[in-house]
Image 1 (cartoon, helix red, strand yellow):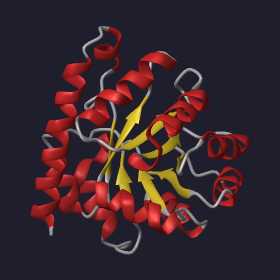
Image 2 (tube, rainbow, N blue to C red):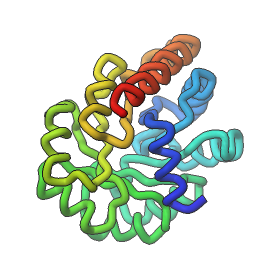
Image 3 (cartoon, rainbow, N blue to C red):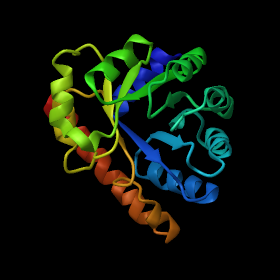
Image 4 (tube, rainbow, N blue to C red):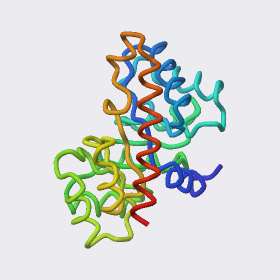
Length: 217
């Protein structure tokens, strides 16, 4: 699957679960609970213990059933090792030219982080396929809508501040997808073994995203 196909899959799913798991084992169980609830876009962050091992395990277990990537990429060498682990896309919270070059060099779908208009323009100009607007909570959907004014051609995805209650606003603002973290899959629930609740959250989120995207068309 080339990165154009991966981008189309991201758009089709509309939702990436951004997971900062407390332990490797619990992270795998978190993903299992999310998949059971219909969330199939999974981003394992490098802040997760043994993140690459987790991705390798998930890649072997789920294969093409899920769209699996790695986030919080901050070192050039992480881009290559993430691909080797089985990641289909890479996400960074920053736009640093050398780092972005290494991410693009993997030929995986690349998302670089940005906030200001200059950063958004730079990230896209340097080759980021999607610009991750972070932290999304700082400006909210209204800010993304304002960014889309001068940059209607730049695919954007917010992370941070995304919840089931405001998902419709994000899609109305013109994003291609949203990244949801603790609102979707709180590590606290995993630590307490409440995986059924994570599955229910996933089901609710998927329904909200589907409705929000239909309304924004």
